Image (cartoon, rainbow, N blue to C red; front, side):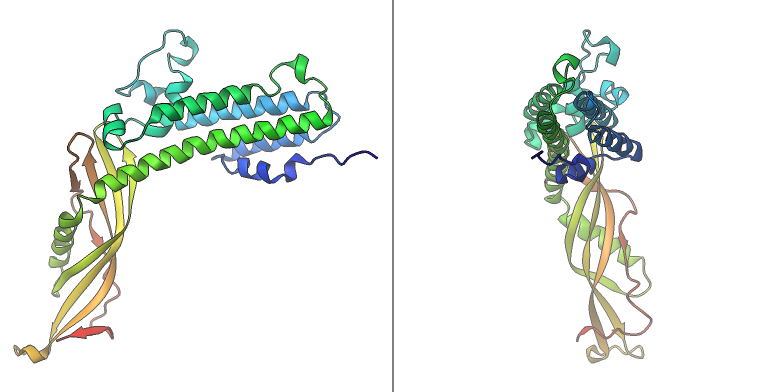
Amino acid sequence: MQSERMNLAANELTHRVRGHFKTDWQREIFDAAVESFDHEDSPLRLKNFASALRELGRIGLGLLAPKKKIRACEWFEQNTHVREEGGVTRAQRAKYAVQGELHDEFVLEYLHIDVQSTVKEYLALIDELNEYGHTIEESFDTPAKSAELEAIRALESFDQLSGLIQERHASLLSSAADAARHFVTSELLREADEELDRLPTHFSVGDYHLDSLLVLSLSPDRILYQGRGRIYVRRQFEWNSAVAWDDVAVVLDVCPFECSLEATTSYPLSTSFVRRSMKIDIDIYDNDIPDRVHEK
């Protein structure tokens, strides 16, 4: 009895790998490679599939780490043996994909991210991926079961390759955000107070909660962040212009806010708010006293 053949297009791993691609044309190339592999009568099915994966890996890394931007980095050293890539190596592309233009001292000493270990892992996975269907002599007319096994292994290597860069870059961004969180408390309250003071009705800040602090851009000496959170706002009302305390009501509410911050990448780290970037959403209020918590 003939064993059932695998349908690579329906494989869960195939769908996961497809999710790594950022553009439609990358997905189209991948889909075509998978469809080609599933044509079991082609003696080049493994060779063509593995070659397409390697090319997609090269293209993807090129999109994440453009040669021109790498050459502008402070840490870049030209490799005279890689002429066709302008002296840019795969290791440098992997490094840029993780740390961007940030200088080495800041990444290693302040963020405690060892990018070099990631680069070594990446290069090892590249070498592993290059083994699958590498030569026509070895991959031509490979038996179905062997070809399927090699295709799955190639997909696993590609999945690890893509996931590694994404995971380590996300870890770096998270560390950069954590480093800035410790410095924003007093300045955030001051910025919020200044924003509320521009309003005709009396508002004041009771407290705040910073829900997220995301890195928007990295440069050698600056990191730009976007912060989002909630401001606990007090709004004071007076009845009929009365001055007696009993005729004064204070409404407590929670208003969402967003702001932009920038930090230096020199030691010690210093942060500052981008001028007039603090935006507090007070549309929840109307002209009357809202039905919320009242203090007297």
